[in-house]
Amino acid sequence: LADRFVEAFAEYLHREIRTEMWGYAKGESLDEADLLKIKYDGIRPAPGYPSQPDHTEKRPMWDLVRVKELAGIDLSDSLSMMPAASVSALVFAHPQSEYFAVGQIGKDQVESYAKRKEMELSRCERWLSPILNYERD
Image (cartoon, rainbow, N blue to C red):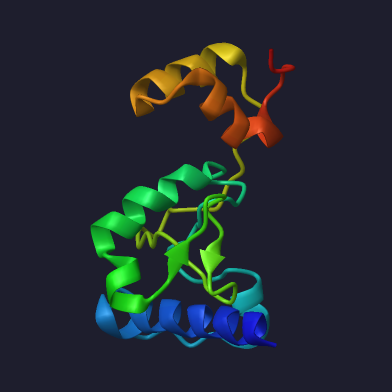
């Protein structure tokens, strides 16, 4: 039940961002069906979902926004949010932003990504294992 409430609140907050806080969609008037079809401008992808499969990006988000200090939401060693009924996302307001899914990635892509993140390859592969198109060593 708590998960449903937090997801509903995330939808509410995203609407408030669009119509009030950032105000780029002041006249927005969407019914439930249009909301489910994502007829609004902007997106709110979250770490661990298809458009942002790397959960390790939560750490920089937590540090930048001081999530633990200001909201009391902590991250476990596996980067699950605690309490479990928590959500996080990046919000993009551009009218042409669309959800997408990162497909399967090759070893050369993971090696490049690991180098840019200054992360050991094996650790990077572990976090990205659901989208690897090769078997890890």
